Image (cartoon, rainbow, N blue to C red):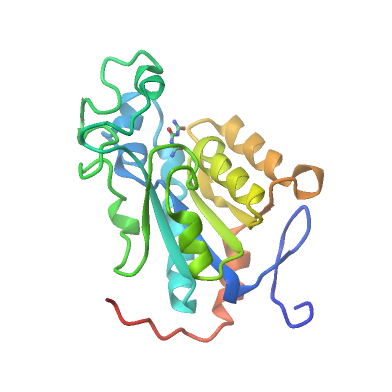
Length: 235
Ligand code: TIU
């Protein structure tokens, strides 16, 4: 505790947690990125590296729900008519089966398709906003900033995939907008172990140039000391 404020062990220094103004954001834990047989695996990636985060994210999610933190989920994807898909994004990678095409779990990264949705282990609950984003960052072309403002959120606990792509982009966007981000190292994951390491280094370097890096255990221990929240009525 510092001035009554809980402290979460983190790097480059302890994170002063303001639970009243903190939200949990879970980035793109979608079947197409994380599940065997999805788009990510079809691209040749080893999804087991991403799946390591599922357990810790689930524990953080349960602790955050119990404590009454605002929980926000994001999904990367596009309208079925692909009008929000930049031609550059569609062309990138010269894929035979790319965004909008038929994939192993439906049309790839298209809203409403099975593969686009969040994995069963982390299904959003009613009342938890799901932010659909066309880009890598969760702020770009979404209503996330309005949601955070309406809930007086100033701190973001960040989980999800992938560490160097959508997690890093979102943390940088949040940082420029004045949010303090605590990224939980065991709750984010990359297809590339080297990128996982370096992406976390980048966040906490230079005195926390983009934010803090901690572990789920530190946050969960702090949340466990808070009284159980009465869930708001679902509307
Ligand atoms: N969510 C997210 O990170 N989207 C990606 O495309 N990530 C990759 O690592 N490709």
